[in-house]
Image (tube, rainbow, N blue to C red; front, side):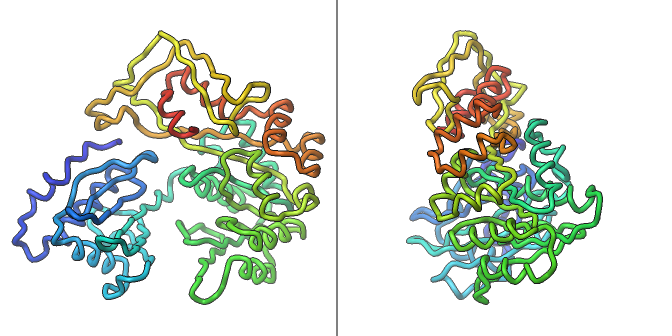
Length: 415
């Protein structure tokens, strides 16, 4: 954590229960504290003893306390009012937005998602990151070789740039930085359109379209419609199924630059996942120009990190192993640091996050040929390493050895 947030019971004690605006004031305080502490999400989880409040900070959930049980429905209703949702509709999920400035002390837009549960409506509020952060590709913290490979692929007139990783790994942030790069720093003006669900930030000079499922405008249909809008660059928020993948790859094969995100645990797994959902080898080989996989790892708090010199053996999961190592071969690390926790980091031992990434060297002919032969993802990963790819596992170990992160954090992120 980055703030000195106090327990929720202390916040509640500062607001008189008899006040008519008690619920709005409590929620304003919670959301303002979440924004101040740079939480990415705030969870309002109903239970038999009340509504538990959790902040997600640096990718990890922290419990702050419990709101009164008898007011659970009122807290959910107030959040729905702020997001312009139907307060009387409690049996179906809803999604909405809270605009910047609507809640005092919160200058960020928020997305509100509700879903009915056994004890009432569960509400999750996501804070969109500040528009001024990570404007361009060179501000993301990507290794220079990966950044240059991504930018080189983005300068082409066609092909697909796949930004992959698990949920919450910063894929959309990377995509936005790349889009700003093309719009602001490109050698020529290009027609750029996006298809998003939802739109997180307004991007100057780019036509952004939000997918409206209630109008039966699915992502694959919208890709086909947008092809008639004379785009040169198309950003598809996320590929989730075969029909969307086929429509997106068709765009990449017909003279358009495609930028899209995709859920996968490694760069090699990204290729395997596309094969699994039905993308043909010729489309993969001809259409994909860059495959990047990334993850976010918490940084140790510099004020309280505790150094150890007794050595440690670290094992990272199968899909992240370096070529030539067995699935269970541990990395031997001589020195490392553990999170201790202090006032500055609210006792977590961590402050901020660092980006880890790997990218398939598709410029190597044998790596590109291997994609056509449908090898398994382990074989693709090993071949990529043999051709110069530094896997995320090796970069993760380097973070431990340089005392930037801890063995526990690497295990949490990679398994």
